[in-house]
Structures are given as structure tokens and as C-alpha cells.
Image (tube, rainbow over all chains, first blue to last red; front, side, top):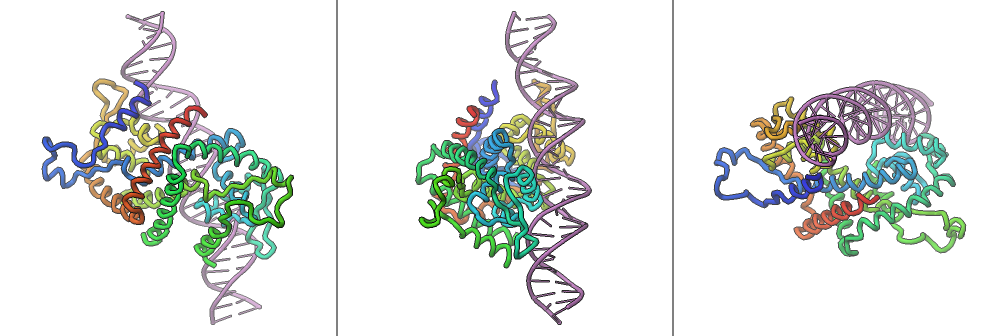
Length: 182
Length: 182
DNA sequence: GACAGATACTTTCTTTCGCAACTAATTTGC
DNA sequence: GCAAATTAGTTGCGAAAGAAAGTATCTGTC
């Protein structure tokens, strides 16, 4: 039996909504402590698995075609439509650790894809800018990334796509509300 | 200025749909090579950022309250509703590397939360089972996780929630189709 | 106007993760 | 029925990432 067959079989295995059967059900004692979680119905898990798979695919593309890791790609992508950008802003936008951003910026500078100049009015900040080489790399990369995304979302109608982004926006805002408290 | 204020300001900065203005627009030469990507409209990025933030919140809960990492939590959660489980199946379900699963299983066994017995009919496989300690930990953890998820999705209507999962399912199936080819 | 925080990174240290090589058990091909 | 290939799982190693400490600059505040 192949992996794929096994996966599919097991995925169909038990989509149960309640307890599986009336006979042979657990005793009251057992029920008290028996907690079940169907991860396939658990949004955080589903979201994470989907995002990971998508990220893996794209990361492979960045890596193989342009020797970029995800952090570097994100910095470049933000630079593509922000005229003024600093490492701190990238941290805020992307939720990445500042050390990770720092290393990504360093690597990009070493490769001559971006420049990093201390800001005139605040010497702590460093203004990031694309070089010509960086722009031309993006001119290749961005259309490919967009084409791949287009293929991915081709199964969704325009309305479904819009609603998906909308729902995700709502969840992000809810996270902001919940996050600080806990 | 606080971080949050800066983030919000910058988020509103430029939601542009096309080129920003007619005057002062780039020359034909510049246009040819200038590629822009608004990451906020780019599904892979949005999905990944959302999933990461959700995952971080939950991971913090698993860690602080139960000293579990994400991999360990996933193994336990799958065990909570699969009567027969092996490391291989966990790999298939969760997309995690087998080494990561192996280490998670080992840690859980060391803590006495699961048992790991060689299968009678195939000595390569190891049947995984929850111990009483594992079940009672889950009896605490699962309701908390579900309560947190409920708070998170409280902003979505029932329909929006259903559509979200539905759209995600479509994307997963599309990935299966695209993945092997590239 | 100087000294106590903040802020924007950078660097170091430790852990984690994923690939690859390995072992052991099982299936397949001839 | 046995060598070759496959599969399940473990282990070792290098790259990457987060936590925390370090550095330089800036912002109050008294």
C-alpha cells in the first residue's frame, strides 16, 4: 500500500461529529475524563498545515531559482513597494524576530541586492533600498510567485477568494484583541 | 511613537491597486523592470503570517501550562481520537518530518504520557497509545484549546467559518494537484 | 545638560529542525 | 527461497532561529 493511499484511507476514517455509536460506549467514568479532538476540524491546526505546505512550495522555488530563504524573500518583497523601509518595520510587518531580519538584511547586502544606509535624522535606523540587481531579481521573481499563487487559487471563485481574505483579516484583528490579554 | 501606532500607520500607508499617480510616473524603461508585490494581498504570505501568529499563541499555552512543544501536542491530539496510531501515520497526517515525530514520541514516552509497543504483525511499526496520565492531561488541555479557538473564531459567523474551512479544503486539494508536478 | 530609560539593531549562545545516513524488519522479484 | 528493494524508525550533523545580552543612539525628565 502506498503512502498516498494510506493517507486518503485514514483521512476518511472517522469524520465523526459526535460519539461513534450507542452500543459499546464508554462508561460514565470514562466519559468524564475522555477528551477528543479532531484536528481536522481544529482551525489552528488546519491553517498551520495549509500555510506550511504553501510556504514549503514557495520556499523551494525561492531557494532553487534564486538562492533566497523565506526571510530574505520577505524583505525584498516589502522593499518592492515601500520606498522607505527599516529593519524594525520589517519586523512589525512580518512578525519575524529582529535577529532573523538582521541576518536576512546582512545576507542581501552582501549579495548586493540591497543597500543599507544609516538614516540622516536617526543614526540608529538604517534605510533599506533595492539596488538595480535587487530590482531585476524581483522583476523575475515576482511574476513567478504571482503566477504560482494564481494557479493555487484557481480553484476558488472570485467571491470565495475575497471572502477568504476577508475572514483572515477578521481573525487577525481578533488575534490582536486576544493576544495582549493572555 | 509606540510600535503599535507605527504598525497601524504603515499598514494604511499604501493599499494601492494600480500605479500610484499619473504625474511623476516611472519612465517606460523603469516600468519594464519595476515589479511590485503587495504582500498584504498575497495569499501565501497572509496565510503564513496568520497561521504563525495563531500557532505562537497556542504554542505558548502548551508550553507554559503543560511543557509540551507543538510536535508533542500534535501527537497527543491525534492519539486522542485514533485508536491505532504509528509514527508514520502522524507524519502523513501532520506533514512533520519523521525525525521530529520520532523525537516527540520519545519525549512523550519518557514523560509517561504514551506507550510505544512494537506491533505484533510488523515489528518495524510501533503502536502508540495514551497512558492514563496522557488521557488526563488531554482532558485538561483539549477543552482549553477548544475554548481558545472558540474565542478566536467568535468574530466569524457560522457561515463564514464554514466557508473558510471549505476554501482551505479546496486549496489543500489544489496543492496536492500542483505539488507533485513542480 | 546629564543621567535614566527606551530604541534599533547586532552578536552570542542554545535549542530546534530537517536532511541524510544508518539499522532493523518486511516485501518483492526472479 | 534468497538477494534486492522498500519501509519504519533512530541518530548524527549542519544550518537556522529564538532568547538574551551587548552596543550605539536617541528621548525624556529633573
